Structure formats: C-alpha cells, structure tokens
Length: 392
Image (cartoon, rainbow, N blue to C red; front, side, top):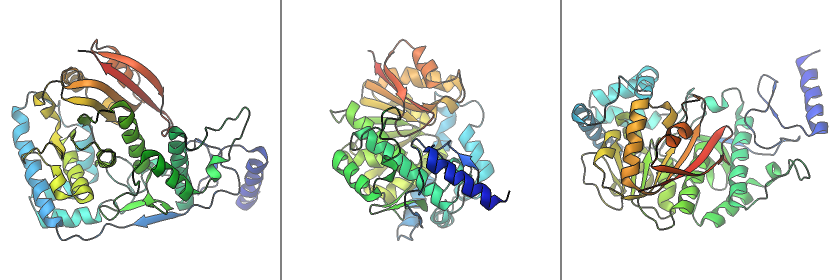
C-alpha cells in the first residue's frame, strides 16, 4: 500500500469515527497535542511568521541589559541564596546559544542588539524564551502547528466561559475547534476587557494568523496565567513571579491592571525578559537590576533578591514551568521566602515529569501553605494547576 493510500484510509477513518487526531508531516496519526478532536476537513487556519523589527533604541537597551547582567554576576557570590553548580538553563543556553553568551560576556551592546534582532528565527528544541516553533511542535508541518495553537485558543475561551466545554458523552463533540478564530479572539477580549494582540516586532514570532496578529502558544499560556492572577488577586496587590520566561505573562498582567510586578530569575533569563519587556511595554516601564526600582514598573531581579523583598508585600506569587526543574535546596529556600513575602496566594502551573519531585510534593511538605485546589490546567495538556493559601 502506498503512502498516499495510507493517508487516504486514515483520513477516511478519522472522518467517519470522529476520532481525535491530526496528521504530522510523516503521515502518522498523533493525538498528543490536541485537547479537542480534529474532524476533517480541518479548520481553515493559517500559520504565519512576523520577524523582529529594527528599532532606534535597540543598542541603548542592549547596554542596559549588559550592565544589569554583569552587576548580577558580580553580586551573586555574596548572595545568601546559592546555586549548586551551573543551573539547567544557564548550561542549556551556554551549549545551545553560545553567541548570546559571547555577546553578553564581551560587553558588546551593538553585537547583542543585532543578535537579539535575529533571535528565535529558527527552530529550537526547548521552549520558554522564544516565540518560534519549538520542541512542542517538533513533528508537525506549518498548518498543523497553527491548528495546535487554535486548539489552545479554544481551551482559553472555554476556561473563560465564552465557549461551552464540549462533552464526549452527550455532545456536542468536535465543534468548538471549528469556531471562527477571529470571533473567538473577540470573545476572549470582551471577557478579559483587554486587547490580546501581542506586541509583534520585538522578537521573531511564529504562530496562528488572527485578526489580532500572530498568536504563539506561549501568548495563550500567558493570557491564561494573567487571567488566573486577576481572579485570585482582585485587590490589584503587587505580583511576584518566579521564573518569568521572557515576560509575556507580566506584559498581559500589566494590561489587566497589575502594574507593580516583580520577576525573579537567573541573570541570563533576566536579560532576555528585560529585552522583551522594555520593547513591549516601554523603556520607562521596566526596572532592571541596579536601576531605580519604580513602584509601578515591572521589576526584573536576580533570583536571590527574594531574600530582601519586604515581608507580606505580594498579593500573589506565581510560578509556571520551572519549579520542578530547580535544585531541591533552592526550592526549599524559595518556599521559606514565599511564606514570608506573600500575603495571599501561590499559583503553580507545572508539569509532573520529575515525579515525585513535583510542586505538589514541595508545597504539601511545608506547613505555611494550605492547598485550596488542584486541577488539570485548562490550556496545557499534562500540566497541573494548584493554588495555595499562604498562612501567616
């Protein structure tokens, strides 16, 4: 049987059985990425790319980033919180993106600005710091990448109640994925009360084409996190995020009204977040390490600064995608600091790949945290969402 015949038979099978799935470029049926069944014909969504744009202040911003990075490296040896050896992310970036490290370590703002202009234009196997096609979609062609992003947007709409959650027992089942993507985007904006269009042109972006611009799946993940913050922190108290990636969550939280936002991360991750956020929300709206820490700005600080943040100063502490990937000694210290600086809740959205080293395990073993709920995450298959109340 030829490959074309196999594809035709599998297509007919899916169409008739209404089984969930989509085709990869190899012609194999895979169900690992979609939360909804993909019935044929597939929804008419398009993959699109938006390159980074040259901006007049890129070199000036790069100089700020380099200064903050080297101050962090200079101060880290005297910090009370210590890493044991090189961490996962710094080692990964050193091996996978040596040019980035070279630009920073040689203190060359023009070279760093040019590097960041081109950053994320090609496939990377890891996620978190780019908005290009990454390992999440490694087996798929462009149209199916777009389909997986539409699937996430539908999940976000269901989480907000603007689309009903489908029911395979009584139906409908497989209709939400056929909804018009631009209508869904409008409904999400109406529910959240903000524009969801990402600030394109900052870094290279691949994603699904919508009337709100090109949406990458990390935009959707971050929108969801920001929406959860808005539910749990209705008093608009300051927010602290451990491990903020490139800062997309902080950007969307700011649109929702959370202006006093602190990110704690590794020095190299702080540099990447600073680059994204300065260009996304404005140079005066972001405070880097070593600069004036403005109250209503997004403050990007090295991880050990959690030790000197004021007591009970944050209404919510959030962590997505990183807690299980940190050394045990650091996690225990972070929990001590969370219980000290937090006055409300902790929101964790993490995988459990390293079981039994899970966020649930660590928080449950600390008496300061009372679990309020544990559930599957609406927008991320295989991720657990947990909320803990911080007890004084």
